[in-house]
Image (tube, rainbow, N blue to C red; front, side, top):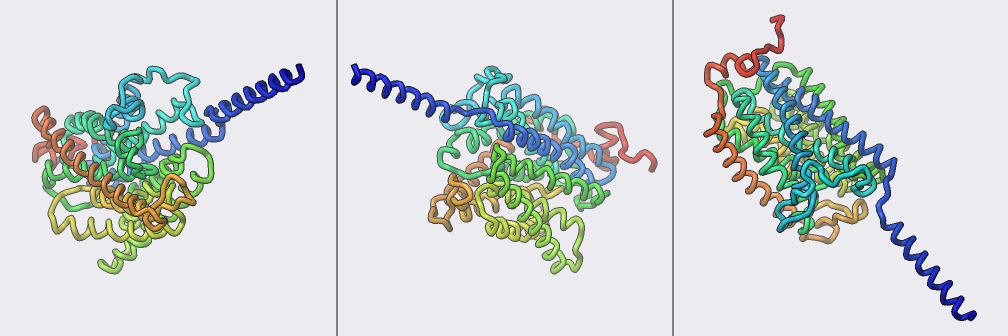
Length: 429
């Protein structure tokens, strides 16, 4: 009898222990993580509207500023709908051959008030990732401004989001084949910036040069405001990609700020050496290059790694913009490839070199005993680059047949604000 009682007690304790273990493994809603991710999502929205819109708008000619701004706004609006319609499901739900997700969460079917992604509501994770998709498309517009039909841009937004951004996001973040290879991209170096940079270059080549291809920012005050909003919002972009309110988010934020500051300083110093002038535009360009380069590495490198990335990000993209682009003669109007493409590639490769497992156990670079990580990073860059180049080219060819790509010479000379929208930015002139 006593022996049977002991056995029953042991069985009861074992069952209780198993239930506690299961409970510990079951994700629970964390209010602190949820609060931080709500803030991060709002910060990334701010990056596009109005941050990027003002940054690009200030860089454009005054007769094209409204068209430039509305390209970012319409991209955000279109992607906002397409993401909840099918984008999220295809990027983050299931996996078909490592290439794409499934449509089982079409229109967020099956996402409920109780659904979680880790410790935050799934609805919130949907919204956070939406903001990344939207800004990626909006970034591309900087290569196309002052000569692309607005109707062509709308069609491009729909097609490029569907056939380029969504599959690449799945490959890297949604459990696709690059994720299975352990490619590292903390907050979007490959998915966002290399992706946008290559698409910008391809489109610039398809569209050809503007009649006046010289960069003549009509309002550097807007550029400075846009840069400040991008820098501020990027803390949500990078620190938010920890998807938790923790030490990883904190170091991602600090790495982001450090790299950005050093890239801005380095660009200005380089510019001063070669042109004898240190400009506000140079500072802003360097800051954006630093933000881009640290993005894939923000949650993987230590502070020294962030310093190295920041200095190189202020140096190499400068030469891509100031020396290589003029030599090759392509008209990437606002240097989307020169800044986002080059700095994105730089950041992705340096992540494979500098990833410190003491910062994030998910990443271990060459300098910490894992040389294969650098090759994996190089492969991920190459795959995205080639796919993006081919897919964007096909998309632009289709659009050329349907609507045409470029406005007439007369419309370009009069300005796209009037020809495409019937408005002026400055009616008092």
